Image 1: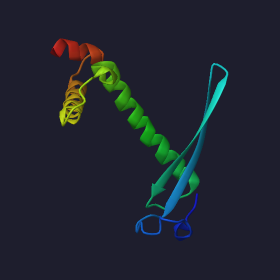
Image 2: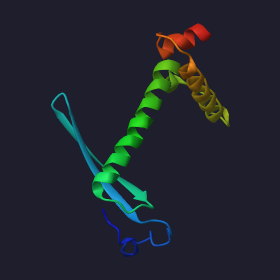
Image 3: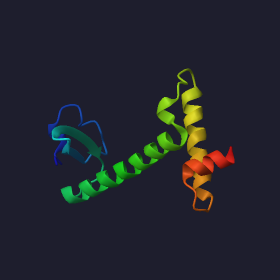
Length: 117
């Protein structure tokens, strides 16, 4: 974690920037290890453990949302590419997903969507 941002070229103009966080992540799948480095810019000054928690919480939410959109609405297979169509349909899917989460019952979200159709 670097808190002396004035030393880094090009970032001194970012008035609220207080920290640059570097995360080195690795995972092993079927004996194959891959590594990835990600950088985050933050207006916070916090210990590395706090940043680790914030980043994990963010990705947990992101992964759950995108996974649900793909499973329930097959979002990855959508072919709308022109003008405002992709944004409009993504917004409609997210609104529909929120409505489906409001329905009580034992059915899965995917089944609730099918029943609503």
